[in-house]
Every structure is written in C-alpha cells, then in structure tokens.
Length: 290
Image (cartoon, rainbow, N blue to C red):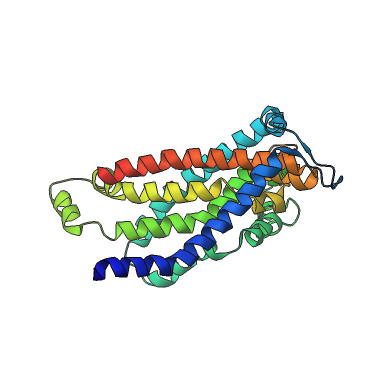
C-alpha cells in the first residue's frame, strides 16, 4: 500500500511539469496545423479563407522545396562525416598523455559553447571575407587569388561552420567512451603482434560504435533545424544554393508573408524529422541489443 501511495504522490508531483511540457508542445503544433489549412497572408489580416491541402501541394511541388531538401540532407551528412571522423581523431589525440592536457581539452570543447550566430559572424567576417579575411590574406601570401567562399561555395562553407560548432560535442562523447576502453586488452593485442592500425580497427572502432550512434542521433536532430548560420552568412543564396527546409519555411512565412504556406512547410519539416528520428532510434536499438 505504501508503495502504491508513493507512486501516486510521485505522479502528482511530476504532473505539473508534464502538463506544462505537453501544452508547450501541443499548442504551437496545433496552431501550426490550423494555419496550414488557411490562405493566411500577413499583408491581408482578417481575410483568411480555408485552403484545404493547397498549401501542402504548393510547398511540395515548389522547385525550391526539392533544392532545400537536397541541401538539408547534404548539410546533415557533410557535418556528420566531418564531426564523426574528426571527433574520433581528436579523441585519440586527446587520450594520449601530454603536458597541458587539461587546457587543450577545454580549448577543444570551447567552440561548442559559442552561440551559432556569433560563430557564423566570426567565420563570415574574420575568416571567409574575400578582402580582409584570414583565408584571403593566406592566399595573397602565397600569390593566389582570394576565394569568396560564401558566394562560390555557400553550402560547403555552412557545412564547415556548423561542423566547427559540433566537432567538440562529438569529441567529448567519443573521448569519454575511449577512456573506458580496456587497456589490458590493447596491451594483450600488442603483445600478440597486432599493429596500431589493427588495434584501432578491431578494438577501438567496435568499442566506439555505440557512442558514434548516439552522436549521429543527437546531431542529426539538431542539424535538421540549422537556421541561424544560413541567415547570418548567405540568406539561403545565391538563389537556393544554401537554402535548407527551415530557412525555406522562414522565407515563406516571414519574407513572403504567407503564413499558411509556411505553416504547411513547418508540418512537412516536422514529419520528415520524425521519420529520420524513427529510423535512427531503430538503429540505436539494434546497436544496444548487439
């Protein structure tokens, strides 16, 4: 009886937070679904009419949507490739004993705590500026013509900026997993004649598989909603060369004043994100069971 009462008391204590979180999610989602079925333009307030699925049809058949979808997938896969591979290499480096190890670890992790808008501005003005940027000065030093990254390689530039932000997160997770690797097992493999590459491939990589899966899941969820970096650096351009789905929803809603079309795009983005999360969760479940 005491156990039942304690469970009831625990549920009552947790229920306000659960209800608040539920309302925090459901109310905006419900309003977005409602607006997605309306012809709702901010320039004509009070003139809303029912549109049915027209907003969804317009959004999904718009050529910009397929460009944005391709850019979104390219952005996610590009950042994941850089952060996973770079995270493993940095974790292996930071796992080695050397003087000043603690300071170096803090410096490596520091970019993760910089706000996306600030980091994007730093990369845009201090590194990628074709006139006064550091990359331009390096190119001039070697007698080369400065390259305008944001104009000629906008999506690759954004991938680099976002990867720089998320690399510390991947490094931290993988370094933590690497430190739990059985050293005796490595020493035994070394005594049996296994080289460094063989020990890495057959011992380290299998040990890091679960951590890599967690990194991929968490980063993918956040990378699907990258927005600030694009807004600050390229505004989705040139054309739609760096437009992803979140920026396309923003442009439809607040630049074109089409709240109905933007809301439909938001629902499409939520559905796509949930599909990706579903498959990633299944992949994680299989890895945890292995």
